[in-house]
Structures are given as C-alpha cells and as structure tokens.
Length: 316
Image (cartoon, rainbow, N blue to C red; front, side, top):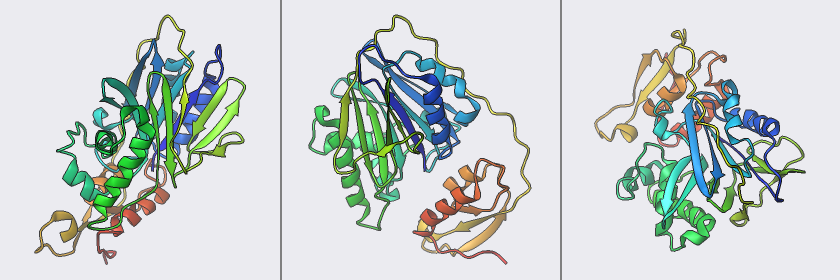
C-alpha cells in the first residue's frame, strides 16, 4: 500500500498551489511513510527527486515544485527493496524510445513474475514496480501509448504469475512525460480534485474528489513550463535515530519461501528494529507498538499477502 498524489494545470498562466499539494501529500503519506519523492517538468525535461523517510516530517520538500504546471508524487510502503536504499524509492526515472519519464505505482506484483523476469528486463533496482515500466515495451504498444502499455504490462505480468498462483490485480499508476501526464488505475484508489488553478490527484479524497474511471488509460497534455530557474534539490530527509522497541515478532520459515522442500514450517521469536522492513524480507507477522510507522492495520494487510503463500500459526 503506497500513496500517490500530483497536479496538472488546465490553463496557461496557472501553477500549483503548494499549500493544497502539501495537503494532498499529507493525506497520501498515511498510506506509506517509509519514503517519499516528487517529479516535475522543467524546461521540457522531467526531473525527479526522492528520499527515505516520512513525507509528513519533510513537507518543505514540496517547495521544490513551486511554479510547476505538472507534478507527481509518491509515498512508499515498501513490499520489495528496502526504502533505506534510495534507488528503490519512487518516482522511478525510466527511458523508452529516447523519452525520459517519471513513474509512480501503488500496488504489488506477483513474486513469481518479479523473480523470473527482473533480470531479462534489466531492472536496476530492487523495487518490483520497476518491472512494470521495463516490461511495457514488450506489450505491443508504442511509447506514444504509454498509458495503455503500462496497463497491458500489469495484465501480462499477472498472467505470468497466475501460472503458479493468483496475484494482486489492484493498482494505480502515474507517469509524467515532458508534454503529457498519464493516469491509470484498477481497484486501488485515485481521486481527481478540480480547483481554479488546475486538477490535483491523490490516493485519498481531499476536497470533493471524483474517482478516476477504471475502464481506460487517461492522459492530459501538460501546459508548458515557463520558469527560468529551479531551486536546488531538497535535502535528503534524515530521521532521528530510534531506540530498539520492546516488542516481540514472529518469524515463519516456510518451504514456499526458502525453496527448500525439506524445510519445515518452523517458528522463531525475534526482535526487530524496523517491523515493516523486517516483514518484507523475512515474512514477519508482528504486533509492534502503534507509535511506530508500521501500524497494526498495515501489518494486518501485509499478513494477508504473506498468508497467500505461507502456512503459519502463532507461537505458544
């Protein structure tokens, strides 16, 4: 579960309202507090920035897009690749047919498709969302139909995964090109909010939003950027050091995960510094204090994903 947000001007002379974009970012951050990032169009080029940490603790970074006519943003709840390694965070910067664009995704991919296809599609990160963009040129669409290509990419990756087990069909995606913004969703939320200065997007309704139609890939031709200068990149967010939490977590070793047919469904009790990242890499089901960024609700949702390919029981 991640959060998406963004903005595009609908008339010349209009630019983003930073205060409202920060409100959208704050709402989106409730769906992912491990990393955050932004992308904007400047002088006909897409520029991206990202950082580990919670956007709510670093809202000033949004000042970087002052005067922009097109922006996309992402708040990350990682399911593949640690957020502490910034290369895994979004927006992901991708090139296709000599066009560089920024890509953000909310959803999960089949673990089978990710494991079997990431190398041949030359993925450069440990973030499974990258495979969607890398696989898009293989779908039969051209770069001029990027939205449809991304949509078809997920469908074909799902079909690959279903050879082994069902995978999550829900997603929402944004792709920002120098002259166009694509919006695609299926299942996962994405709202459009129309205001005098333009249209805002967010995974959570902020102000009289309307859900994006799920029947097709949508796009909007962006208004040219007229700025003559751009602030330097925001500073990377550095969270305060955390003390080790006093909680117990359960870790399940499963033959489905390890690939060892002789591995029994054993359970070990372990202490975890970061319960969310530990869960991602070790199949953890934990009950940490609710003041950590991994909430009980988030971990319960993650447990559902884990339970699809794991047999487990609570330790005595």
